[in-house]
Length: 113
Length: 189
Image 1 (cartoon, chains in turn purple, brown):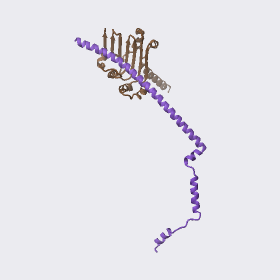
Image 2 (cartoon, helix red, strand yellow):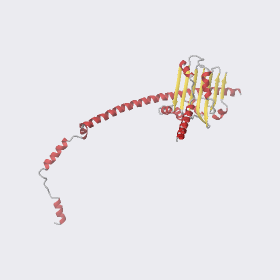
Image 3 (cartoon, chains in turn brown, cyan):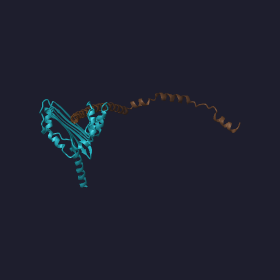
Image 4 (tube, one colour):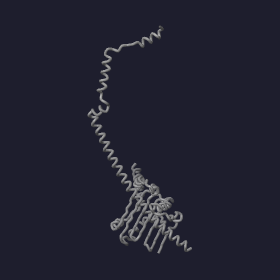
């Protein structure tokens, strides 16, 4: 047996676990079972629970206020748009009236000539 | 330092003052007339309001209006419609016409239709050979209308005004070169 074979055999030799190995594994499994998930830990801490509730409330109220503000702005924008269109319609009507009169006069003078 | 401060204040005041002068002042008598009127339309929109309104002009047919108002500094309209004739006099209109006598203003169209008692005038404000405002002053027996579009507006925009907003486009606006020298006047008896 050469030295390499000897070293390999030594490294891969069967080794018996220590006597308390099974007990340690079972204890760790039990510990894992008892550990609460991160979110349940979050809600069990009283400070964080209140902070979460406040943040959620702020988000909900903020969302409602934002939606209402958007609706108000949309309504104001529609009124502004209507006003612009009304103003342009009035301006357009009067310009058209003047143009028509000028055109009538021009047609009449053309016919006369 | 004090001199610089006062110079800045003076400059700001003159800028604000000149901006304020751009808007045609409506005489107080119009408020009294409005109380007597059957129908009153009052539109006062500065640049900020126009920009705000333009954000909501995405409907079909809004394109032309949006294109015109994005350039403007303001739109001011007063329209009074009365039940009876003779509710207003020339004295109510004269202060407005007086404001349009300045060298920057040119009356490009004056229409007087005597049988219908219509009197329509269109004024354009030229600054450095560019149109910077349009005023339409219309008097009818039962109606008095003032429209002021403040800001860059081309005479060609008049075509767009007459061709949109439900008004048929049949005639063209007078061209600037032809109208600046002599206002087009139509008088019919």
